[in-house]
Length: 252
Ligand SMILES: [Zn+2]
Image (cartoon, rainbow, N blue to C red; front, top):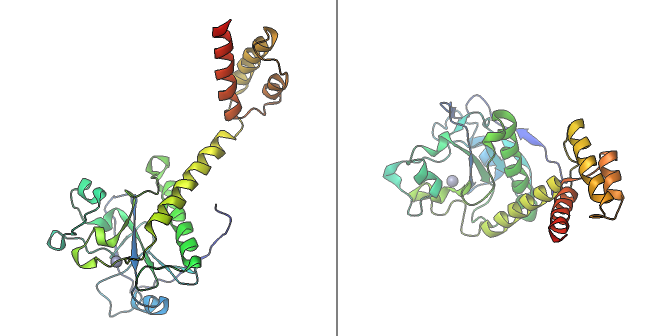
């Protein structure tokens, strides 16, 4: 899934608006549409005349990635306020008791007008979502992991009554969530194909367990015992063997 690498080009300057997060760790990504070109986004987010808005990232139609605000900081992206209550408030915002979403979100702008992303832009945005999540885990720890699902990946329209068309009626929500769901499945499969992360004593125990099962002919293939001795047994195999051995012993 993560076969293509992208470069993120730093595009903020001293005029780019941002604030401290006040101790919040971000765990939600908000998608936006720029309603302008990437170059006008670059100039607006670095303009001395802009004292109202910013975003962490921009994704161009060609799939280029620009960053204006550090993930550690709060971008002026969502303008959440009870006076501009969305008609479709995100569940996460309700759960956060309608606090200013800028504290706990990371915002991505997409170059365009209606949310109909180009293929390059879609792929780059998928990668960027994963990058942001991985960055947060690296920075704040594994307990800050969040799945890329419809709770944690939302649209601006879910936070603001005037932003009904952000990121646009054509924004590919279904495809985006499906892509992330597949990624999670692949990650789980990858985990199952990893060699057991065992200490020597645990390998010895396993060797004994499988050796006994081989000796009483509960398992008949020596390769499993050999795999335990060679320390090449993976999680998937272990699960399978445990089920098999328990079942055959019960039947005896
Ligand atoms: Zn927006």
